[in-house]
Image (cartoon, rainbow, N blue to C red; front, side):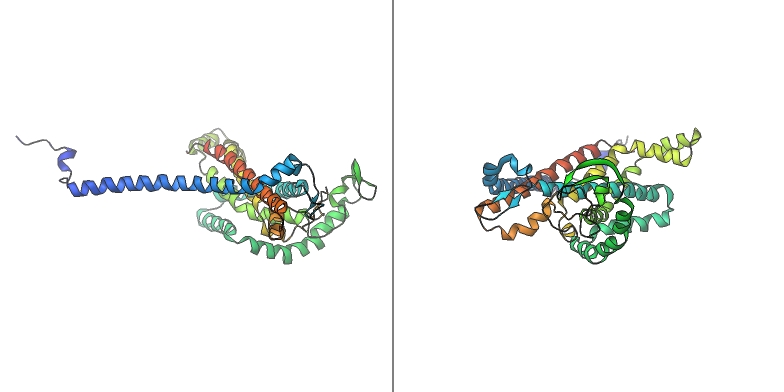
Length: 339
């Protein structure tokens, strides 16, 4: 009577050296993986510790007033440090970028996943993602020499002519004791080309690839059963697309948050088009400054200790804000269940 064939009988004869080699390789792989994770956390903690140590003098001397005042005067003896104007510039440019980039990114993702044929969807996806590989300084040069002059002579001139006399909601008094009204205040000062609007537009182009790519991946997870069921109930293509966008809204929001994190930390391109002035203005045509921009512009000039510590305080604030936005985005994206 023949013996029954089992999986163990089909396995090759065990070699003690081979078995030991596999055990060592498995343990080495696990050890390298754990070491890589620990190294990343260690680097992050080291960066945080270095920035906190460098910013401690400014934290002790300035405290929370660092975020509530807009005076930035590094002259010894008269020095005062407040990043309110820089935080305002960061918020305005980021808001403009999200306002423009999110609808465009959703439209691009819908086109790639639900409209374009396969032979076209691939090249379009490649071209969109190629934008993410362009260096920031290249965007800045293009913005300074091409976008800003065109923006000043065409878009901003048109906006100024259309809105300068539209006074719907009374606002406060501006410098010069002139009362401003909304939306005329948005074009106060006239076209300049180097302003909040230019900074927001350059950020729009830079965050569009990341939002589009994540939104595309999320829409591809929309269950085919739901789509076919919607068509079976008589839904139109647009109604089915709305259903897909609603189903994937958490992931789309997470993509927007990741884009916001990129916009907050962007530096060189914005510095080259925003005007770099330390003031708070409701006009889109006013020059401004961002928190990342002031760090790049003035870090090498920080000669005395409190000045250098204030710059480290700015860097620490940027690090914490980037961490919080990325953590929030990851939590939202993890709620998406693959189809």
